[in-house]
Every structure is written in C-alpha cells, then in structure tokens.
Amino acid sequence: MMPLQSTAIEPTWAALTPALVLAVFALLLFVLDSIDPDESNSGLLAGTATVGTVTAMVVAGAFLLTGVGSGEGVSLYGGQLVVDSMALFFMFIATSVATLVCLASLDYLEGRQYQAEYYILVMLATTGMTLMAAANSLATIFVSLELLSLPSYALVAFLKNDKGSVEAGMKYFLVGALSSAVFAYGVSLVYGVTGSLLLEEIAAALQSAGALSGLGGVLGVGVLMVAGGFAFKTASVPFHFWAPEAYEGAPAPVSAFLSSASKAAGFVVAFRVFVVAFPIEAVAPVIDWVLLFQVLAVVTMTLGNFAAATQENVKRMLAYSSVGHAGYVLIGLAALTGAGNGEIVLGAGMIHLLVYGFMNTGAFLFVALVEYWGIGRTFEDYNGLATKAPVACVAMTVFMFSLAGLPIGGGFLSKYYLLAGAVGAGVWWLALVAAVNSALSLFYYSRVVKAMWIEEPDGNLEGIDARGYPTGLYAAVVIAAIVTVLLLPAIGVFSGVAFDAASAVLQLGP
Image (cartoon, rainbow, N blue to C red; front, side, top):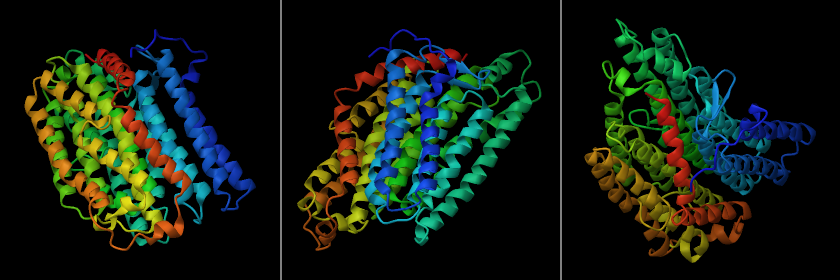
C-alpha cells in the first residue's frame, strides 16, 4: 500500500502527538496514584495505561496512512527531531507492543504492590522509544535512549522480593550504564571530527574535502563505539550477554516489552544514524561499517540460535531466540552494499520488526500466562498443556512457527523479504546463513509445540483450575496471535509504507 501524498500538519509540533499522548497519560497515572494510592484499583490503572497506548498507536497509524511525515518528514527544533514515515512506523510498533503489555499486566500484577509505578514506567519507556524513532541528532538520541533505559532497569527489577528479578535488574543497570558511557564517548569523538551532532551535518562534514585529514582513526573509533551502543540496545553479539539474564529474571510482560519494543527502538536509531550520518563512501577509508554489520549479523544469528537450541527453560530459550532475530534484522544494514535493493533490505528489516513485535510479544505473554498459573518454566512443565488451555496453546503454536519462518504468520514473508533483499544486494551467502539458522530454529520452537500437544501431562496443571483463565492475559495472547496470522495476507498494507520510508531515509544519505 502506497502512502498518500505528504500532508502538512499545523502546528508542526503536533507531529509528535504519539509521544505527547504517552507523556500525558504517564502524568495522568501519577495524578491517579496520588489521589487514590490504593493498590487494589488495578483495573483503573491498567485501563488508563492501555487507553494511552492505544490512542498513541491509532494516531501514529493515522499519520502514516494520511501521509504525515512522507518524504523528508516534519523537522522540529532545528532538525533535532524529524517525524518521517520511518519514525511513525516505529512509533506504531512501540505503542502496539506497549498496548499488549499493559493489557496483559492487568492479571499478571494481580495482588502485587506498586502497580501505578509499573504502568508509569512502561509509559515513560515507550515515550523514550517514540522519541528515539524521531531523533535526528546524536544528542537527542542519547537523551531519548536514557529515557528508555532508566525505566527499563526499574521494570526488570520490579519483583522486589524475587532474588532473580533484582539480580537481573542490577546486571542490566551496570551493563547498560557501561554501554551508555561507551556510546557517549563515541558521540564525543564523532563531534570532535565533524563539529556537529546533527546527522545530515555530520554526513556533509565527512564528505567535504580533507575532512578526515589526520583524524580518520579518531572517527573510526567513534563509529565503532556508537555501533557498540546500538548493539547493546538490540542485544547483538558480543553485547548480548545481559539479555538472557534480564529477560529470565524480569516479569514476563516486561521481557516481552524489552525484547520487542526496545529492540525495535534500538534498530530504528541504528538505521537512521548509519544510513544518514555515516555514508559508506565517506567513511570507507577508515571503517567499513557494512562489513562490520555483516560480521555482526552472522555471529549474532548463529550464536543466538545455537544457544537457544541448548536451553531447557522456555523463557531463556525465547531470550536467546531474541538474540538470533537481532541477527536477522541486522541484514537490513549488512546488505547495504551499494549494489541496489537498499530500500528493499532496509524496509525488510522494518517489516520484520513489525511482525516480530506481535509474535515475540505474544510468546512472552504466553509464558506470563503459564507463570500466572504457576505451572513452571521448562519444556517438560508444558507437557499436555493443550488439554487444559487449547486456545492459548493454538496461539503459542502460531507464535512458534511464525518465529521459525513457516507460512503460518507474517514471519514467513518478513524473512522472505530479508533473504530476497540480501540476494539482490549481492550478499547471497548472508541469506544462506540466515536460512540455515532459521531452519535450526524450527528445532527448538517445535519442542514447545510438541510438549503442549503431544506429551502427556505431568500432573502439574492444577493451577489452571485453581486460578482460572485471566481475561487480560488471555485477550493479549489471542490478539497477538490473530494479528500475527493476519499479517501474512495483509503484509502489503505495511510493506509499501516500509519500503517508501526506507527509500526516503536512504535519499538523505550520500
């Protein structure tokens, strides 16, 4: 589907409405909590947060369909923020994931303290994601990255009486602080060479005659450090080691939130920075970042999938699977060889993150459902689960097979676009590695399906009868499954927007 002709919006700051809506609802939750600090009013808190994320999602989708942000987009605050089609596309991803998480958290947080704080942190983190999508300066990127990261650390450690959650939050915080420092130092080196933090001005400085005279090494180190900061946020190897610990220890809805929405936010910034600020022709004499991302893509998808195949804990398997999918999305940068198909591979990365947002979020929310019932976390604990919860198990089957790339959901077409784009760009070997890894992933994804549908129950399913079927969690899982399936025939609704958005960003480059 092609976006409509660019639509002017007045005042221009209204283009940031999705982010503003999230910030307003976060403040509203503060007010509600101060007026009625009774923690038992979970329905009001969850409903307020869900309405906020749905409103932001609808606005982002409406802006996309009406052409707001088409072309070069709406520039704000001297170019510090740019709301273009790519920004709106990722705002839609972040808010859709946040909506599912807020809906599911209604039941997951039942009987727990600090529920208002939980939803406030989710809303603020999502606000940071939407601002990351629109950030057009290394300064605003850093600020929005921290607005995402700081609430995320608290969310991982939300279960204050759970040793695993607190330990995971501490590890996430320490590694995150280190990665932020590395990223900030890299930004300072880039600024020292180019004299600017705006992405277009950095590119113009690098393309000017003699720009790298005597400073090529400094720029190369700066670009590497910036890439390292993004690799941490997207859980790419070798900066992935925090992810399994954080995802396993965090509440399952938080794991869904971080592994889907946070990863998408990290990738949109990486796409924009490397395509716009560091044109490969200008920086090739000091660093070939396309080759760098090719290596990262191969290592990330391979290590992530092999590590996932060795796990016995379903949540930890999904964590390593998330690492593997980061490797697939890295193809969006790794295949920008200049041989053509640039908008295809970059757009394919965007499409995969959209589909991944639903199928991966749904998978983690299914784990949250199982945790709610107190069944357990290993593959064996899932034995015979379909006899008690067939609808939820059908949804989980959809998630597993779609993540593996089978034609049961949108994951099939998003991976196809990635592989076809890589072949068209001349890096067929990268597509081959991705195909082999995708075939490997079917092994461990099918283990979950086999346990649910084929194995006999181990007598540990009494919690389902005791606690019943939670409305919010069940609804979130089913909605995610329905959208995952519908994205297979309806992927064209988003693919045209994604390819056009990628083309617009590429035109801002060299």
